[in-house]
Length: 118
Length: 116
Image (cartoon, rainbow over all chains, first blue to last red; front, side):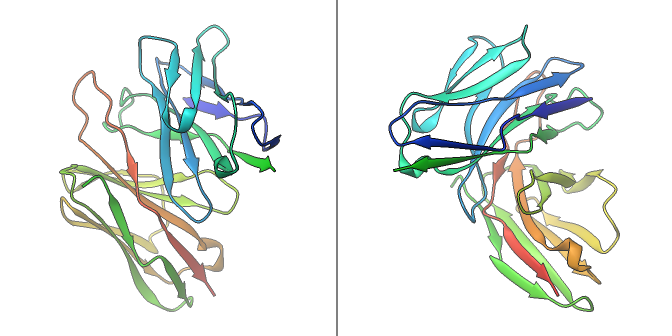
């Protein structure tokens, strides 16, 4: 079984300040990890993903995340946020189809609402 | 074309109505998904179709009936819904998984459903 915990439901940050959104996961098999962003009244957009290799992953819009296996974490960071980053951010884990599903089953965290303060 | 489209954007229906949600992709993907997202909650998987065959049904009530008429289209037929079924319904698609690889799911913008 796999699960994702996003400890912060809301994170307010001043514009141009750095931000870190926390994500911890648990899984009985090796995992693929993702961050998705959802702007108001829109679907989900993939920000970045960790499949294997380098533990520091760079994504779109200046975001990056670091996979830490020992701490089972995959925190999302951005050095300087912009008003347009206001959105809901979801961390997700996939077992890569290693379960009996045959397709990637994504398990999402409860989300973190990032609010940028001008 | 890397887009998943969903129609309608908004739908209001009564508990006795029958309606359908539509999803379309032209990326050649062979796996398609329906998710339900309640307000301030994460998406929850409902159904997965793989090569036009239902491969996952996450114990969804029978008032939701999925249909995959071809590899580009996915429908969700709705009948006798309850007010608690009001939510954003998201469609996604991906390549069929090849051994040892990962296939990204591409999401549509969703249909916001209100059941009165």
